[in-house]
Image (cartoon, rainbow, N blue to C red; front, side, top):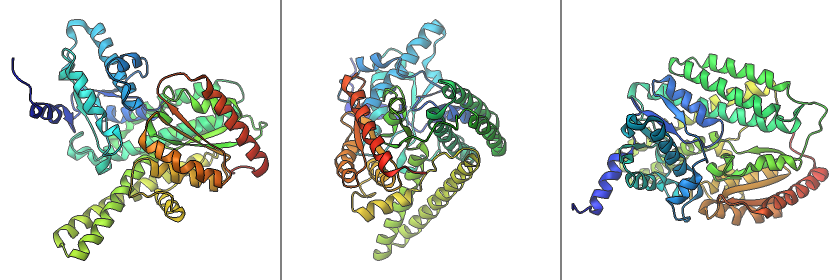
Length: 451
């Protein structure tokens, strides 16, 4: 028997986990939230890649079977999604099932978050199952702000990134429409049904227009949806306490993983707003600008002229990218707010300045903690009635957030709660959220709320 060395293992990782071309593959996207993944699939479809969003959470038991329980919860959920999908494809196609025709999309981040290791563990597990070693795993990394080179053809990268970012913003808008309208809907259930239909309409719009660069048609389709959405609200229902949600990006946005926390908050009288996916994309771009600026200062001091040139190119590239993203985001939100007063997104620079002002944490440390802590401070200072920190059990960045944000919120007299999830049902969790909402309601009565 041929001996498998550690070098062979690293070679496998290089060959079947990386930034591979999606052309000609069935491109499988895990669902992180009910909106963004589906719109992104539409962008891929427009550029000729048959992308689809996998059914989520149904395969959780399969994911648990191949993990130890020490992994970050999103790793288990997404592993279950891909294994369940492959199992059902085998049953459906029989002898016509060819695993080499599939490509699994699992982005990553640089450390210390364990997210950077999901696709490596998934690779090891897929390799242990007959035939699934032929399924490629393609990835993008936050270290270069999710550069698309290698995933799509070079001549399409710029157009794809623009359409991809717009899909993120529109997905955020659909989420914010849902959270703005549902607490005030005229009849129970109409908002959920409307937003799911809107998501499907916008996914088709992205599939039709993304590769043509016709963002005007995409915006027109969104505007029509917003006009219709306004009529779902009952103006006679008074405004409710406003709750801001922060935390680890996957669990706070994956409705099944967080056991529909926002709906529970609404049940007890809240209007809740989750941090956006666009915030994370803007953060990764902002971080590249920040790193280039720091490197430029160091290399100017040491007169390393070759490095200075590289730093300047990087600084300009990502500064222009961030400026474009802010402009696009502002354009979409402005249009929507002409009809419905959804909450605007904030700029990452303002979060950075908030941390420096309060000496609470630092963007130098990185991770989602810098976003969650600064966002909690911004929400508290801008009239929110409570802050919820949602995260996977044992998540290091979110536990950092909990240790720093909780005393800060207490000092500002703003109700705050940490809610962790690992797939188990805890009978005391809803009682804790109900108690939190009582505190938020008292804060609302005393201080009012963000307008």
